[in-house]
Image (cartoon, rainbow, N blue to C red; front, side):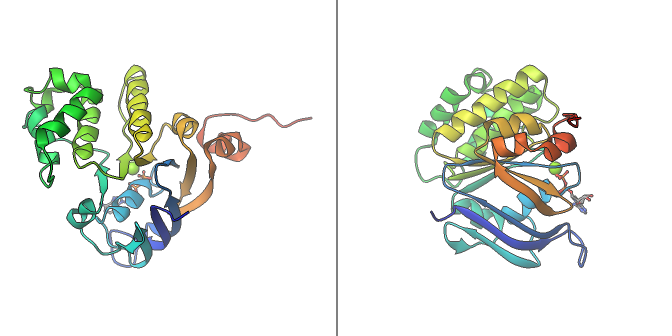
Length: 242
Ligand code: ADP
Ligand code: MG
């Protein structure tokens, strides 16, 4: 199968000569849900930014739908069917929920109303709050709006950077359910998460990042069952057999 997205031997960083991503390899297939986990500072957000064109790789290749996108700008990448919801500041606080969705759909060719209705059906709470300023939403509602805004473009690939950060456990569950529901509509999702166990439980596959490289990869279950990963990232203490 042709991968939807392939990242091959990518080096990238914020300062010339200082690489945060140090030869990283990654791929996602159409319709897959892939979790990216790893400690703080491992380069998870940097990988997301490099894929979405917010950072230009110094070397290596990024291919999306069979074409190189390394060096393209986010607005060009969006047009090809990829959306990104950043870790923070993912909504326009001063705009209403409805205006946020309309901003998300600004390059849409089809009917904005039909798209908005689809998002409101998926996230009924956004429909209730459509006239409210996004800045007044709760953390969970903001995450839903951030995802809804990205979905206005009907992307084939959605990149979510820590959608569960700073949410209460109850909201974490509901945001994760929404992510699964979006995935079930056929959209591939890259899910960057601190909440490693939950992310791996629902992912088809996962990657463990460490110091800017893909340290381990496998199915969600394989990574969950891997004692080393359990000890390092899942808060599981494995007892040695005597
Ligand atoms: P993660 O998302 O896995 O926690 P990041 O990709 O955000 O990690 O960060 C990886 C490294 O890149 C860290 O050492 C961080 O300090 C550095 N970094 C992140 N953003 C910037 C930036 N805008 N400028 C310079 N360094 C940055
Ligand atoms: Mg991050």
